[in-house]
Length: 113
Length: 118
Image (cartoon, rainbow over all chains, first blue to last red; front, side, top):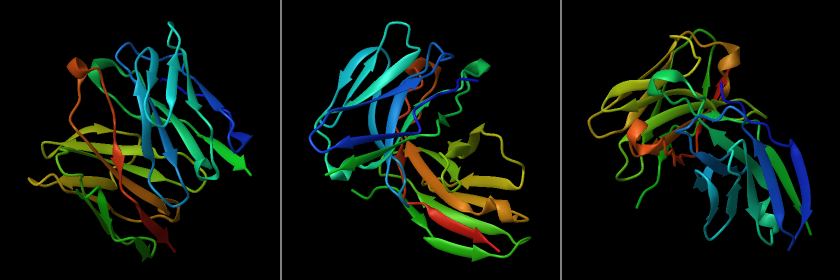
């Protein structure tokens, strides 16, 4: 099974850049890496997805090294509204082409004024 | 453009009862997945429906069953409720993916149904 490991919690301040790293040593060849954001009592919200190297959109960047055994979500200039739980998601590497999306335990990011 | 909708918002049931939760996917999406999220935990994958069939299933007992209708909406049924079934149940929709697509998996989640079993 592909297992993800993330820090349980992180603290930052408004205006800073935040980098959250996820380890996924058993990632399968066909797996993409996807990050979600979740606020209390809401469903997760898609942030960014990538396969290798670097991906950037209007809210975040995703850095993936060549071996793909980890990934780093980068949030530029965070604000108080970025306080949330962030999940790294990869497949479980099951054989036969099946794909079981497996959320990690998530990283609770708290942004302070 | 309506996103993913779920009903009801909250539900209280007694142990042993049965419950049905409903989900309408985002417009244009054909795949629906269901997740269970216990307090303080990440979402756990229950199953996924595509073309009205269960395509993938997580580690959940047969008490959890589902259905997808021709309009892509879906239901989650849970029989013989246990206290441990109390959780936030999330529905997520996406476009079909598979081996040739490289397992891209951008999902759109609904607000969830909070189920309390007493």
